[in-house]
Image 1 (cartoon, helix red, strand yellow):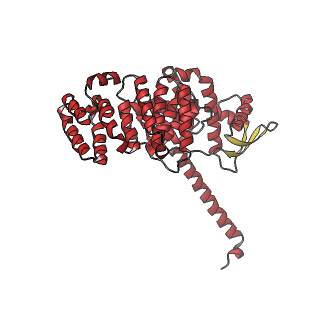
Image 2 (image 1 turned 90 degrees about the vertical axis):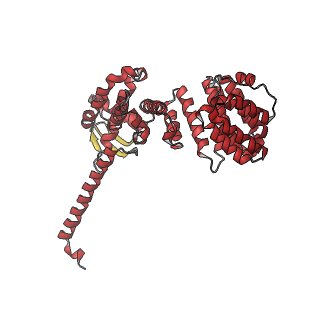
Image 3 (image 1 turned 120 degrees about the vertical axis):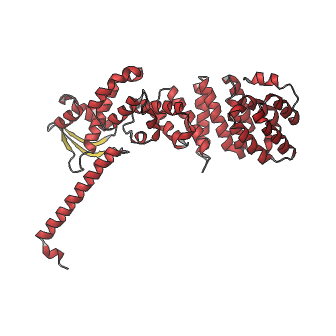
Length: 391
């Protein structure tokens, strides 16, 4: 139902009681009691209770076709008595009922004007953010960016804000960067969005789509070389037992620097042309991940690595190893130096990582080995210099 259609059906004046009477003629029996309660609470001027009842009404699956009429002809009569953040949240539900994005944008623009006050900046940000989302759907990237920049500046001034506002902001930012194919920015904002919501709020289709997009952005992001945060997130489990499970497995292969598994899974790239088109970049990235993993697995006192070892780990010709290490140094994935004459790399630091379970187990084993070595050293020193341990 479009906004114009709803106007034609509501052939009454703006008297709230008449509005409710007209809606009663249209609503199914399951919604009739709500309208009776609305009228009673309105007559008694119990605005808070009326707001709560309308919020409940909006959660009814069958209420959608009547939300535009109720908001435009009933709520608008007393909206000044309502909490502005609640008003915006109700308005966002109404905006979803418009079949035309231009009508939805006009509706939300009017809602923005209603909450554009110094006392209601949180509601204003939420309204502007969702307006930006509609602009994005209308392919107005410039308008979307302008709106999001404004919201970001306001959010930076808040000491605290309701989670729903940050969730809306990060969701729209993520979708904006997806439209621009800016993978690293999408990855960052999509994960921040998921941190602001309960995963149960998303449908299964939305979870799968979000997991797919995060996987693609992690693989193609030219600054993303640590997938641990995504690998440990339950959103990724939605790909299990689906036609996209190979994509999940590919992420684990990258995180482990497993070139052999990468080659096995690469046959699936025909399902994702964007990965097929970026094969050379992905090959370089898996080699860099393999290098990082090789360094990370070594103890801090064993990080002088011959070119030959790196060549074996990354499956690169030895004459390409130096370029790979230089790339890793330039991306700040490692720190150290290259001895061209001796054909070795001395690594002094490796980028911190969010570890998956296998990597955590590997670190546990290394700590156990370190603990055993410390104990052996202590016993040796005690045996060789007993006089130092006389009580």
